[in-house]
Image (cartoon, rainbow over all chains, first blue to last red; front, side):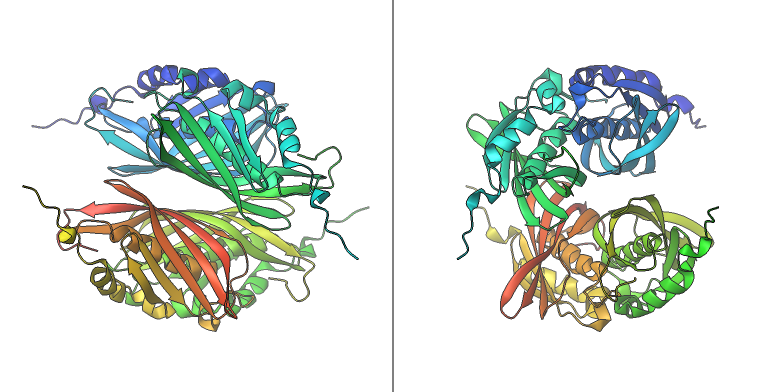
Amino acid sequence: MTTRHTDDLPDPGHRIAASFAKQGLMATLGAELGDVSPGAVEIVLRPRAAVSQQHGFVHAGALSAIADTAAGYAALSVMPADSGVLTTEFKINLLAPATGELIRARGRVVKAGRTLIFAQTDILAESEGRERLVAYLTATLMVIAGRDGISD
Amino acid sequence: MTTRHTDDLPDPGHRIAASFAKQGLMATLGAELGDVSPGAVEIVLRPRAAVSQQHGFVHAGALSAIADTAAGYAALSVMPADSGVLTTEFKINLLAPATGELIRARGRVVKAGRTLIFAQTDILAESEGRERLVAYLTATLMVIAGRDGISD
Amino acid sequence: MTTRHTDDLPDPGHRIAASFAKQGLMATLGAELGDVSPGAVEIVLRPRAAVSQQHGFVHAGALSAIADTAAGYAALSVMPADSGVLTTEFKINLLAPATGELIRARGRVVKAGRTLIFAQTDILAESEGRERLVAYLTATLMVIAGRDGISD
Amino acid sequence: MTTRHTDDLPDPGHRIAASFAKQGLMATLGAELGDVSPGAVEIVLRPRAAVSQQHGFVHAGALSAIADTAAGYAALSVMPADSGVLTTEFKINLLAPATGELIRARGRVVKAGRTLIFAQTDILAESEGRERLVAYLTATLMVIAGRDGISD
């Protein structure tokens, strides 16, 4: 008799929080891990001079960093425990200047294959209780399997 | 008689150095401005824990930040003095883990239109005197004209 | 008193059907215009040898053609009557082999600016009453205003 | 003694010509295979109403079709004989209206990995003996190995 254990996949919350803590760039930017559920991960960032471009908006590179991380961990959250994740490509469209009190990058898996996972991240700026879509990212993530010591 | 003044365009070196100094993110990442010439700009970054992802490689977001900046300033270097630059979109392909002693992002203008400029950035990792291509970015930059106080 | 006339914008159905009929490529591919509403346009294509790649699947180029057209007309459907539309860039991710009885490209406007419009198209394959997502396109469309004779 | 046989790889010319002939879409568009060498493939297309968009330019979808095919076959030309090629994603930037006597899509491999190959295609319009760059494509191609009967 075979039984499918729903815990074949590790708890995405612990796995992703542990991996997030290893990302030096996230600490450098002051980004924080938000909600995590299977197939969906949120990263938040507070706009300030330390992450700005020349006009004072949040830099496209900082938006990309949190949006790519959100997409990557959304993908990792649906991978087996002995797999790691690498980004192979992403495109980001900048739709409006990123300003406000908080930036939220909400990544979600759109299609999971065995080797490649396709994910999409909405980047939202929160200001006076209102959310605006300021950027949109699509990414291809690769499943890294069978590499000693790589499980994130 | 008509005379073409080569100084119709501001000196790209001064303009871009002044703008680069206003980008809080570049200081936060420890990125530095390299060679600047009309239509081509280089940004360099030293790999270290502060810009890493979970496996210790340079984070795709940090690569994107310097490659987007190199593309944007390459575009700005061919724009009139009263114009500013905004990125509308970019795609980055990650070709190999970014490790080594130094990362160089070399941006260049491929095609300059009146409203949109298309640029491409090679991201190279230098290690023991050897350069490897680790990522490739293409970007669309927008010319921002007639906005008070925006000239970068 | 001000009155917003909903007919400030031309009827998207007529405008888009007339423009679609001028696209030689759509006739060559055998593509047809589906549902049209403000901000959303569908194009359909029947898989067959004439639009195949070497393994018999629908060619990525044929998928791109209908998905770009769906995105472009979704954008046109929210533009003033004297404007035309041009694609400035798109990315397509191929998620599964495109086979089946019918391919539907469903484009929708995500964010409309004055000069640039960002749109997204789902490409779905219909087979035995089931729909699968086989590709995903994001596009930037440009509003072309003030060019004599261009209104599509 | 070990001998490296240069014929470990099949003659790219025959392999690609045979595969190109199986692509129904290329015949439908009237596209033709041009120069083929290891890592580089050219496809040509004659602008005419049958491949046009609504303003009479060559449709972005037709440009994408030949540029993706050029990138894909450039990748196939450096793959082992028992492998096939699939596109996983591409981005195309449209830089100028595609008009003229002939369109040439020149694809080349930028970086070849074991599973993924990154390629770039210039799309040039030839008119009165002059060539202009009208579009620029970057693509990720996947190596399909060990599938019975797939060698292109």
